[in-house]
Every structure is written in structure tokens, then in C-alpha cells.
Image (tube, rainbow, N blue to C red; front, side, top):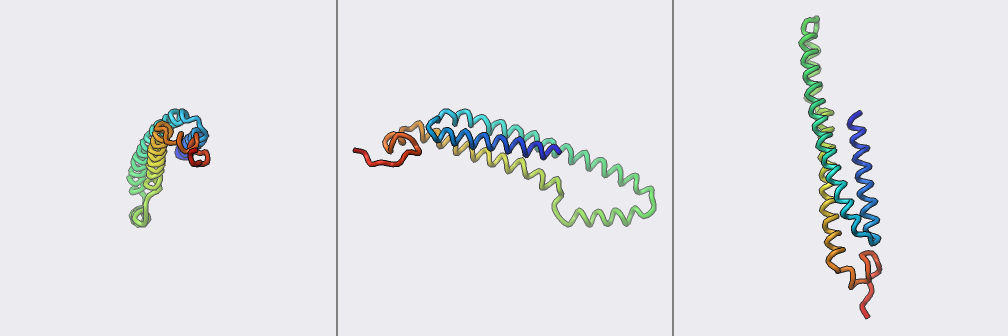
Length: 143
């Protein structure tokens, strides 16, 4: 449930960044400054998300450990533990895959920040003035 909420929050932040960058490309370059705040918020959300996943993983391991101790009092528990150990060795855990998602979003936010800084520098250097007035206007030869 928490990961679904975090994915939704990150999707909204990414959409907000895209919207602001698109509006900035239409001439309102100052929106890039506003858009620069959203990756910071997104990285913060991802760090909280990662900590939640790690805490949940530790809690589950503790509960499973307690259940294993309780099950050892029952007949046939050794066969069950053997089967479970074989099951966990076959591939990555759900928690391991889930811990990758916040890092994917963090990389995306860093990429947005770098691209935004580049575009902000592009709009401030005056380069677009001699090619036609705005970064997206058709390039025209002077004169």
C-alpha cells in the first residue's frame, strides 16, 4: 500500500516537472526555477520511501523469525524450513526489487535537475536572442 502511494506521489511530481518545463519552453523561463524545487521534494519522498521499505523488511524478518521458532514446536517443521530456504534462494526478494524503485526515481530527478539547469543557463546566456527570439522559434538568418 505504501509503495503504491509513493509511486503515485512520484508520478505526480514527475508530471508537474514536465508541465513546468513545457511551459518554460514557451518563454516563461522562470518556471524552471519553480520546477527545480520539485526534484528536491521528489528526492525527499524517495528517501522516506526507502526508509519505510527497509523498516518494513526488518519487521517482516523479525516476524518470520518468531514464526519459525513457534513452528519448530510442531511436527514436520524441518521439511517446511527446507522448502522455504530453497524458495528464497531462487531469485531476488520482493523487498529487494521494491528497494530499487526509489533509486530509479532519484536518478530521474537528478536528470531533470541537470536538464533544468542546462535549459536555465541556455535561456539566460542570450543565445536564443540571435536565433529568432525564443528557444523554440524557427531559426532565421539575421538580416
